[in-house]
Length: 95
Image (cartoon, rainbow, N blue to C red; front, side, top):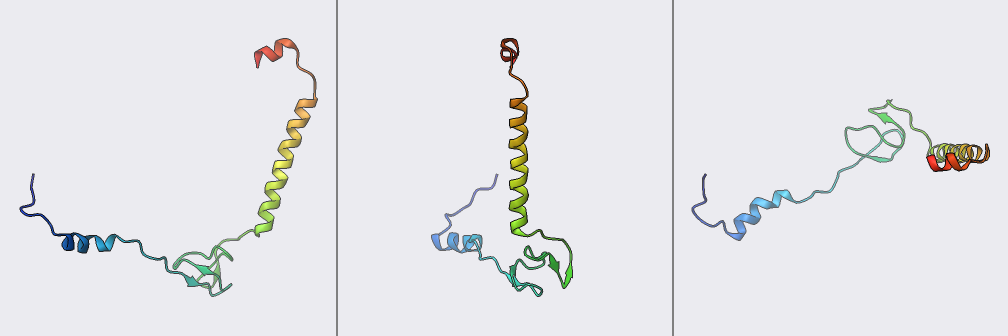
């Protein structure tokens, strides 16, 4: 296995590692809605790419409403199943 003949100086080590630094992300402005988006990707705000609609985006408020409705339904189902009939001692021991 090869072994280095000499120690690498701090400057040369730093010069080698300078390209490993994190770089800031570049953003472009969407031509349809003027929001910031990553280049060469669909705009997350409006769903347009290169001037044409690629995907449909739900409104932020609609997503929250859907989550709230599904949570209410699941809570209602749990309550209904609890109210159906009381469990006997045998059924409780099985659970």
